[in-house]
Length: 177
Image: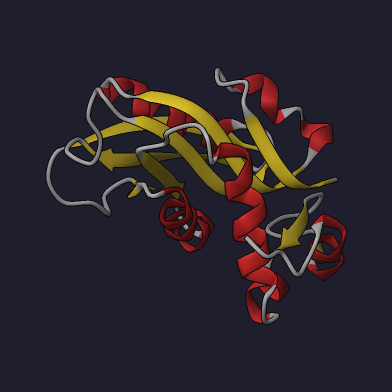
Protein backbone atom coordinates (compact mmCIF):
# COMPACT_ATOMS: atom_id res chain seq x y z
CA UNK A 1 0.00 0.00 0.00
CA UNK A 2 1.52 3.27 -1.13
CA UNK A 3 0.08 6.07 0.99
CA UNK A 4 0.47 9.55 -0.51
CA UNK A 5 -1.46 11.37 2.23
CA UNK A 6 -0.66 10.83 5.89
CA UNK A 7 -3.11 11.40 8.76
CA UNK A 8 -2.10 15.08 9.14
CA UNK A 9 -2.54 15.68 5.41
CA UNK A 10 -6.02 14.14 5.54
CA UNK A 11 -6.92 16.13 8.65
CA UNK A 12 -5.99 19.33 6.83
CA UNK A 13 -8.51 18.45 4.12
CA UNK A 14 -11.46 17.99 6.50
CA UNK A 15 -13.91 20.91 6.37
CA UNK A 16 -15.60 22.20 9.53
CA UNK A 17 -19.24 23.35 9.56
CA UNK A 18 -20.32 24.91 12.86
CA UNK A 19 -23.94 24.52 13.96
CA UNK A 20 -24.71 21.73 11.47
CA UNK A 21 -27.01 19.82 11.46
CA UNK A 22 -28.15 21.85 14.47
CA UNK A 23 -26.88 24.55 16.81
CA UNK A 24 -23.95 23.50 18.98
CA UNK A 25 -22.72 20.71 16.67
CA UNK A 26 -19.42 21.10 14.78
CA UNK A 27 -19.76 18.90 11.69
CA UNK A 28 -16.50 17.48 10.32
CA UNK A 29 -17.02 17.00 6.58
CA UNK A 30 -14.87 14.47 4.72
CA UNK A 31 -16.04 15.63 1.26
CA UNK A 32 -12.68 17.29 0.46
CA UNK A 33 -10.99 13.93 1.05
CA UNK A 34 -13.34 12.41 -1.51
CA UNK A 35 -12.68 15.15 -4.07
CA UNK A 36 -8.89 15.36 -3.73
CA UNK A 37 -7.12 12.89 -6.05
CA UNK A 38 -5.23 10.26 -4.05
CA UNK A 39 -6.65 11.28 -0.67
CA UNK A 40 -9.44 8.70 -0.55
CA UNK A 41 -7.09 5.90 -1.57
CA UNK A 42 -4.69 6.95 1.19
CA UNK A 43 -7.54 7.06 3.71
CA UNK A 44 -8.63 3.55 2.69
CA UNK A 45 -5.05 2.29 3.06
CA UNK A 46 -4.73 3.83 6.53
CA UNK A 47 -8.12 2.49 7.65
CA UNK A 48 -7.38 -1.03 6.34
CA UNK A 49 -3.79 -1.46 7.47
CA UNK A 50 -4.42 -2.15 11.19
CA UNK A 51 -6.71 -5.06 10.28
CA UNK A 52 -4.68 -6.77 7.54
CA UNK A 53 -3.77 -9.71 9.80
CA UNK A 54 -7.20 -10.12 11.47
CA UNK A 55 -8.71 -12.57 8.93
CA UNK A 56 -11.72 -10.29 8.43
CA UNK A 57 -14.40 -12.08 6.40
CA UNK A 58 -16.98 -9.25 6.23
CA UNK A 59 -16.97 -5.49 6.53
CA UNK A 60 -20.16 -3.82 7.77
CA UNK A 61 -20.40 -0.24 6.49
CA UNK A 62 -22.82 2.18 8.12
CA UNK A 63 -25.07 4.38 5.98
CA UNK A 64 -24.15 6.68 4.38
CA UNK A 65 -20.44 7.46 4.42
CA UNK A 66 -19.61 3.94 5.55
CA UNK A 67 -20.88 2.91 2.11
CA UNK A 68 -18.11 4.96 0.49
CA UNK A 69 -15.36 3.57 2.70
CA UNK A 70 -16.51 0.07 3.58
CA UNK A 71 -16.53 -1.65 0.16
CA UNK A 72 -13.03 -0.38 -0.59
CA UNK A 73 -11.74 -1.52 2.80
CA UNK A 74 -13.43 -4.90 2.24
CA UNK A 75 -11.63 -5.15 -1.10
CA UNK A 76 -8.25 -4.35 0.53
CA UNK A 77 -8.90 -7.02 3.19
CA UNK A 78 -10.21 -9.66 0.78
CA UNK A 79 -13.58 -9.61 2.56
CA UNK A 80 -17.23 -9.23 1.63
CA UNK A 81 -19.27 -6.10 2.30
CA UNK A 82 -22.55 -5.83 4.21
CA UNK A 83 -24.46 -2.51 4.32
CA UNK A 84 -26.05 -1.33 7.57
CA UNK A 85 -28.92 0.89 6.46
CA UNK A 86 -31.51 3.11 8.04
CA UNK A 87 -34.72 1.26 8.91
CA UNK A 88 -37.00 0.37 6.01
CA UNK A 89 -34.38 0.55 3.25
CA UNK A 90 -33.46 -3.15 2.94
CA UNK A 91 -35.58 -5.95 1.47
CA UNK A 92 -35.96 -9.40 3.00
CA UNK A 93 -35.39 -10.43 6.60
CA UNK A 94 -33.50 -7.90 8.68
CA UNK A 95 -32.34 -7.34 12.24
CA UNK A 96 -32.67 -3.86 13.75
CA UNK A 97 -30.85 -1.88 16.44
CA UNK A 98 -31.65 1.59 17.75
CA UNK A 99 -29.12 4.14 18.94
CA UNK A 100 -28.68 7.69 20.21
CA UNK A 101 -26.64 10.32 18.40
CA UNK A 102 -25.07 13.46 19.81
CA UNK A 103 -28.02 15.30 18.21
CA UNK A 104 -30.90 12.76 18.19
CA UNK A 105 -31.66 9.08 17.70
CA UNK A 106 -32.24 6.57 14.89
CA UNK A 107 -32.13 2.89 14.00
CA UNK A 108 -30.23 0.76 11.49
CA UNK A 109 -30.72 -2.69 9.98
CA UNK A 110 -28.79 -5.39 8.16
CA UNK A 111 -30.12 -8.30 6.18
CA UNK A 112 -29.94 -11.55 8.12
CA UNK A 113 -28.34 -13.41 5.20
CA UNK A 114 -25.53 -10.87 4.87
CA UNK A 115 -23.56 -12.42 7.75
CA UNK A 116 -23.33 -15.83 9.36
CA UNK A 117 -22.08 -17.11 12.70
CA UNK A 118 -18.62 -17.85 11.28
CA UNK A 119 -17.95 -14.29 10.11
CA UNK A 120 -15.25 -12.10 11.63
CA UNK A 121 -16.51 -8.57 11.11
CA UNK A 122 -14.91 -5.14 10.85
CA UNK A 123 -17.39 -2.28 11.33
CA UNK A 124 -16.62 0.86 9.29
CA UNK A 125 -17.93 4.43 9.42
CA UNK A 126 -16.61 7.88 8.67
CA UNK A 127 -16.82 9.31 12.20
CA UNK A 128 -16.78 7.91 15.73
CA UNK A 129 -18.57 10.52 17.83
CA UNK A 130 -20.81 9.40 20.71
CA UNK A 131 -20.39 5.76 19.66
CA UNK A 132 -24.10 5.07 19.30
CA UNK A 133 -24.07 4.17 15.62
CA UNK A 134 -21.05 1.87 15.85
CA UNK A 135 -22.45 0.22 19.00
CA UNK A 136 -25.73 -0.40 17.15
CA UNK A 137 -23.80 -1.99 14.29
CA UNK A 138 -22.04 -4.24 16.81
CA UNK A 139 -25.48 -5.25 18.14
CA UNK A 140 -26.62 -6.16 14.63
CA UNK A 141 -23.57 -8.35 14.09
CA UNK A 142 -24.12 -10.02 17.47
CA UNK A 143 -27.84 -10.64 16.80
CA UNK A 144 -26.87 -12.67 13.75
CA UNK A 145 -24.25 -14.56 15.75
CA UNK A 146 -21.14 -13.23 14.00
CA UNK A 147 -18.16 -11.70 15.81
CA UNK A 148 -17.15 -8.04 15.61
CA UNK A 149 -13.35 -8.02 15.83
CA UNK A 150 -12.76 -4.32 15.23
CA UNK A 151 -13.96 -0.93 14.12
CA UNK A 152 -12.27 1.42 11.69
CA UNK A 153 -13.19 5.08 11.29
CA UNK A 154 -11.69 7.96 9.41
CA UNK A 155 -12.31 10.50 12.20
CA UNK A 156 -12.66 10.11 15.96
CA UNK A 157 -14.08 12.94 18.07
CA UNK A 158 -12.29 11.97 21.28
CA UNK A 159 -14.06 14.47 23.54
CA UNK A 160 -17.33 12.54 23.06
CA UNK A 161 -15.81 9.29 24.46
CA UNK A 162 -17.49 7.12 21.83
CA UNK A 163 -15.05 4.23 22.36
CA UNK A 164 -16.62 3.63 25.78
CA UNK A 165 -19.90 2.67 24.08
CA UNK A 166 -18.25 -0.11 22.07
CA UNK A 167 -17.76 -3.68 23.22
CA UNK A 168 -14.88 -4.22 20.79
CA UNK A 169 -11.55 -2.77 21.92
CA UNK A 170 -9.69 -2.88 18.60
CA UNK A 171 -10.78 0.52 17.30
CA UNK A 172 -8.69 2.42 14.76
CA UNK A 173 -9.06 6.06 13.73
CA UNK A 174 -6.94 7.87 11.16
CA UNK A 175 -7.73 11.41 12.33
CA UNK A 176 -8.29 12.47 15.95
CA UNK A 177 -9.99 15.62 17.20
